Image (cartoon, rainbow, N blue to C red; front, top):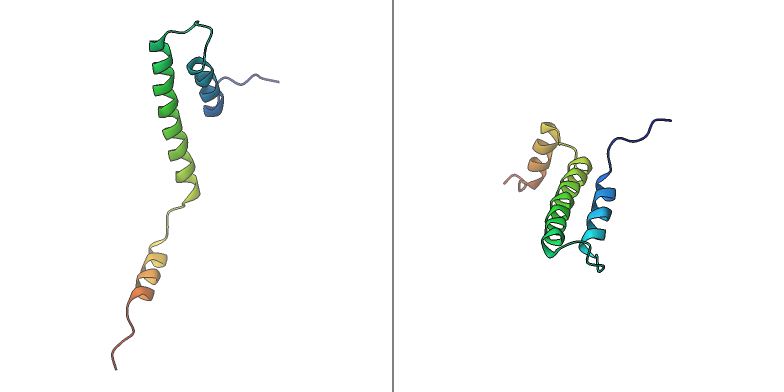
Length: 76
């Protein structure tokens, strides 16, 4: 079986979290800050990806029907 070539966003965020939470002194404060900034960027990408897959684009007929429902009843 072929190995995966790329890490998932979750795997990248876990690795960055391990750098940010490091207490052994292996990483400098600058490294921790860079890890935090990159994690924030990945979190935004993940959120955008999830929101784009949840809301499919609406058809124009559906939009027209929704607008028609919002109109008040005709005056008689």
